[in-house]
Length: 185
Image 1 (cartoon, one colour):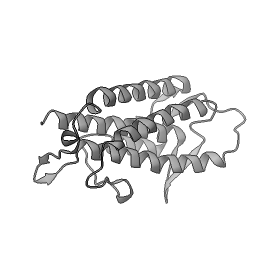
Image 2 (cartoon, rainbow, N blue to C red):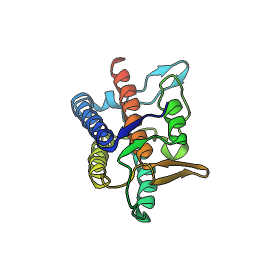
Image 3 (tube, rainbow, N blue to C red):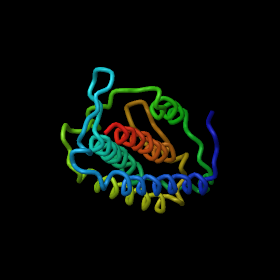
Image 4 (cartoon, rainbow, N blue to C red):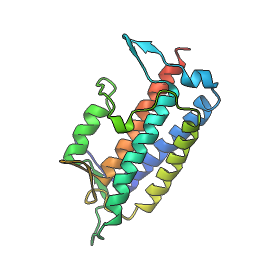
């Protein structure tokens, strides 16, 4: 079901989630030793990502989406009366249902697949991405989140609100994955 939120409530929710992500990263992951950050659990006969690989994947995902968002915002025409709410688009709803649900797993596309041995700088880069995302939330407060379309793939467009929600909720999914790894050492 596609719900409708006021833009203010939607952006406040994203802001709160980002703050929680940063707090979790600083408190739970930054203090870990390099060996713990690079440790890869084996599950169901396959190799799972390490904590650092989870964060590198998130950084790559932010780079991918930010490039698309930047391109769309650079040619944005002002809307006379922007909507004061956010409602997920058709494609955004489908993506969020499947891709952000931990019971469904999909292989990561090559452009956002982490390298074999990232180092702890990916954690600092992740925190910088979050600061940039918080800044973006401030900058886009006057933009229509529904009318601003972001081409993601050949036939798929998300609205700006979808892209922001996907980034934040996707982070939550993989931070949860990284937290699960810490319970295995």
